[in-house]
Image (cartoon, rainbow, N blue to C red; front, side):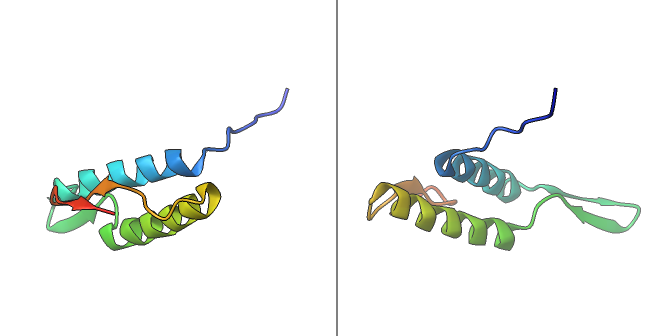
Length: 76
């Protein structure tokens, strides 16, 4: 029996990326023994979010995707 990985929908991926962005915004880095460790890169996550949103719009024919920006402001 082989290992099969479920392919996530674009919407599921958007939700994951947005959850990761929320965690980064809440402070997802630490300093240990003088070295800084960052668990995720906000710039990379935001770029991935934009890519996924564009893909979602293309897949659904939607011109908008309503989200809440990282500071809580409404965004389309």
